[in-house]
Length: 299
Image 1 (cartoon, rainbow, N blue to C red):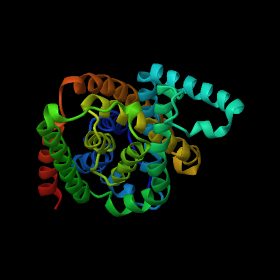
Image 2 (image 1 turned 120 degrees about the vertical axis):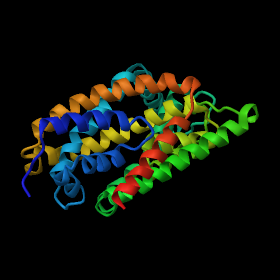
Image 3 (image 1 turned 135 degrees about the horizontal axis):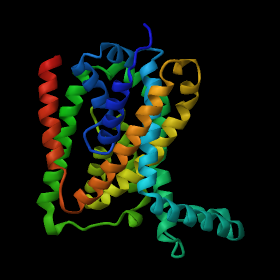
């Protein structure tokens, strides 16, 4: 099959990636469903192929999304990295064991948050390296994506209902104060997002809410947690984009990346404000309705 990806498709997919990666509605699921709904059958079939020009193109979209997130959280990341550098410098004098003594009284809040993000990133990175390709080949089909999108909606609705029922009785935990075990649990929940239709940001938020974070705290932690995962996944696959697999899609990937970058920045700007007062429920309803309609269409 020849490579066929128009610049119009690149723009649409870039915007789609930048929005749905941050909104808790699954970028991977929409990346499967939208081409199928538009009749872009070459893109649909390419997603589960052994050598896929479309998956190579997606490298650019993920890179653009990560850049948009980094730009939005640039002050936060700058503060965290400075804290990390200060802690490493201190550890050279006081012993390297101080780097993982996160409950020590002299550990700064910023360094602790950085360490929690690193710990949370490890599980999905390891599993993704091993399982992403077989899972995509198995489940990157419209009918499977529709079912998982429905499941995603149920998860979001149940979590929001649980949080609402707790009300004033719930004890709010700040992200930098959570136990290391909780950070690993939240990070591990991202493994479910390897299934097309389950949202990375959504499942991270739900996991955070079940572990005491409110909507705003869980959203910001989810966005920060997702940034290195998305960036590392893109950087890991950049050689494929620069190699033979990228022939015919490099310029489209660049265009798509630019649109994904802008869309992700606008999306996270909106959502960071949204979750200060609003809930997951509208996104749950969206997933339930769209998932059901797509299931009727493709099953």
